[in-house]
Length: 324
Image (cartoon, rainbow, N blue to C red; front, top):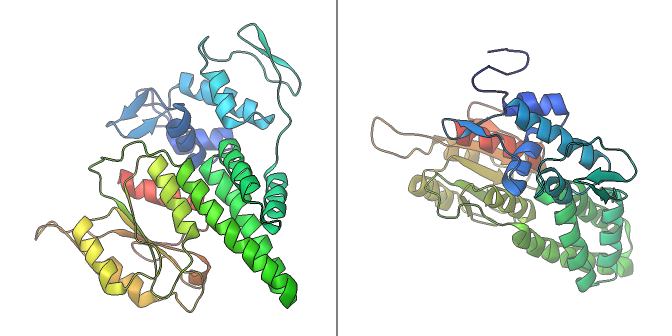
């Protein structure tokens, strides 16, 4: 094994090594695999990805296309189209694919999408919100749409509401609630589970007692479901005893606990979940616990407990636990 490149003659490159070479996140490669079939030809042990040179070359062409503004879905279609992998060099202008002209569209930035989404929310324009959110999911994928468009727009409206007087503030509260509902709907629509009947241990998602903000957990549930990982979403303000019982009954691979504020971030609950075991005596297991959300800012990683800073990082931690 080559430690620097993460390669071996038999197995190929690891996902982390390919991501480093291409300058993208490992979760991006996994997303392209699940959404567009741009995965490795060989999987070690049937699960772990090992990328052969031909696989990496195909990803390099995908990266060149997306770097010049081609939507990921369209780029994947061009790379894996009916006439075979795209073999040409990508340029900022017109290019060719299988003997025909392909126009490289101007990139639609996440910031531009967010501004349009915010304007539609303030106008309480539900049809426009649905259209813009669907376009964001198509353009950026579920992870990108949440991290680059949906979540920043919600935060911007929240800041505007906090800085406004009473009359304007009421309008922005309505806008925030309307946008939240439409985002929740878009996340569910954008999720197309790959393997809803999987026998794999599930991932449990729950807001801690007293916490009612569920939208980030809905985003994580949508992405996990899209990637074929079974999910149990328990929603807002789950009592500690109920959560501990759910862990015993399902034997989860990981448990994600969301806290929006420090007032709800309870370390006792984390220790309770971490200590909850399942299985027969002598072969008991405990879940990996992820503490997510701004409420856990002052809590550091400990044994068996991770604190992801983003949706993409949460996916990395969960998939690592799933592969373990």
